[in-house]
Length: 171
Image (cartoon, rainbow, N blue to C red; front, side, top):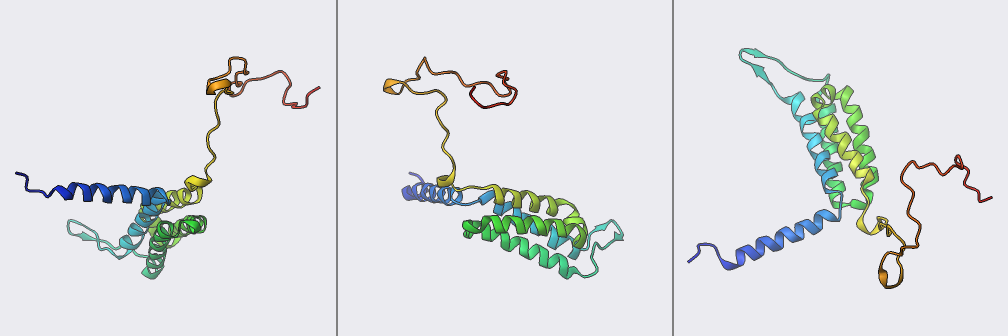
């Protein structure tokens, strides 16, 4: 007899499938990287790291600048998740805040937060919903019955020169 209930596996499987569907409908990884980019930007200026007996403080003129940038990056990551139609705005804002964090927040949270914000913002700008993506066309012209037509011309390889030197007019 098993200790786990028979419905537990089904519930976990259903939860995983619903989470996967939710994740595919939005720029999930862009939002996650943007969220994670805010963490070092907030944490590093307010931490008191030490090396043995040597205490040092990494702080800006006011830690509020790094706090504001970090919180805004966190909010922009959540915006990418829960309002995917505003992903372009959130991505551009995350990129700009990442760039500003270099100056304001200890070289962008020791470069880690800066890089995460830049990559997350870029992914947010470039993400396209599945319904708006162009479908890949057929590689060969289809003949009767959906089979490739042997009489169809082969596509030219990338960078092939057809002897017209860029002239595309038929003469």
